[in-house]
Image 1 (cartoon, rainbow, N blue to C red):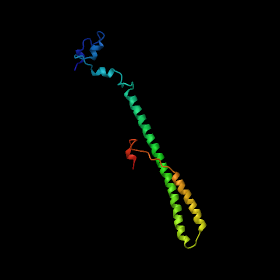
Image 2: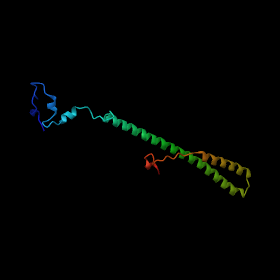
Image 3: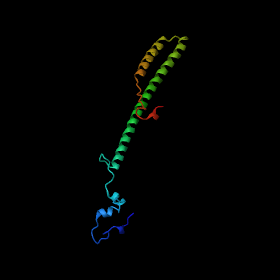
Image 4: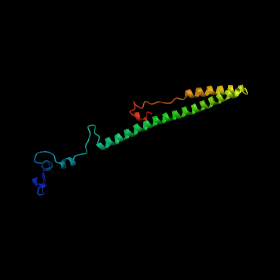
Length: 144
């Protein structure tokens, strides 16, 4: 390693030669030379800080999109569950009415419930639950 005393004309008696200051006796750049250069710039012309910030933005957008897809999936599951509960409720009423019918014979109520059951079944089929392919999105851990 070189010292300041090894460099000729280092002291302010005359202007120092920059090439002699920044290169040691073997002609290699010293650590001072590296510190004086601009920050590291990638071939695309961005600095490391810009690349880091860009990576953060892209990651944030990626996970926001995943959360949006997951939210749509959960909302679809909730809507489907509501329709299934309604369908099961009407089906239970019909089963109970079948048992009561043997004793009392309420035909009109049974006809009304059969119509409602058909409508509930149609509404339940209309509810679509989006099923994203988490493996294709690179998030297989979300697939339970």
